[in-house]
Image: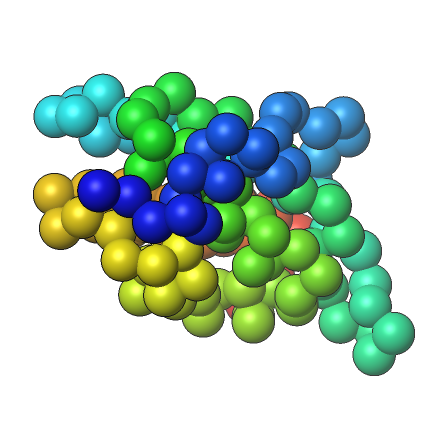
Length: 129
């Protein structure tokens, strides 16, 4: 059984869809379950002059948990600095959504990997360590 939060993010996903003029895209998939996730980020400077996620979007092909976890991680990462966003773990996503069935925890992990891939791609292309 899914939590109310998981169902809400599935039925009303936040930040869904590709966005124009992105700075990086993280793409991951799991061949066993068939889930595919893409996270798009736009980066800009925050008030402190640090690189931060100014806009974020996602496209996910997958189950209820896959869509919900990707929606939630975009909400969690939006506005954060790149370093803060890199610290988001699958446990944080699970905690925010309520208990994810154990057989679906890999979805939270995939969403984290997609976000980290997008951030890594941005940092590599801009030669940021």
